Length: 259
Image (cartoon, rainbow, N blue to C red; front, side, top):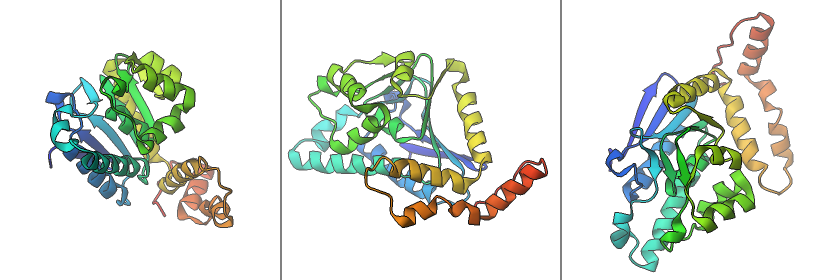
């Protein structure tokens, strides 16, 4: 289990790797649990600026659930409920990570793999990548928590098309549906993702965290509280704001400190 999700670091950018290339990075129970722990740990690190999530190898981001486990891990209603709660916890942990996240997608990104990608802030894929959630062929349903991110990303009509047809489709259609932000040649995916990560890392980290939180909060129809409105101008009290303004006036590159 400890090797099912790997972490690599390069300065202030971390890469989280779903590590089961022999199974197209199919998601076992151990992988789901390990991913939650890894993302929670990285989220707590103040010196990180961006996290890239990817699958091992070039053939898949993740090809859905590890169905070979179903007879043991989803064999009765109670175990299925527990499994669903565990998956929901992992997805929320990925979605609520403080740092910006990018899904680096090569090859298949289907089922639970697509669910994880939808929890990331950005998704960049190669032009031969494939997408879909064909759970209707297995008699499986996406529970409410699993549906939330997909629905927020592409809306009701596209979500139902993806689920009711259960069709696997290509990168161009994924871009058209709003599932991915960018489609690039397969050979350029890693360069594009890490160039994007470096641009994000060069920005003020507190601002990135605020923008993530604001965007998530505004999906909730409840009116903003006075405290939440005030948080929208909290940046003016930060050292990074003073660094950014001074660097702009001096025509220099800002070196933000995250405070």
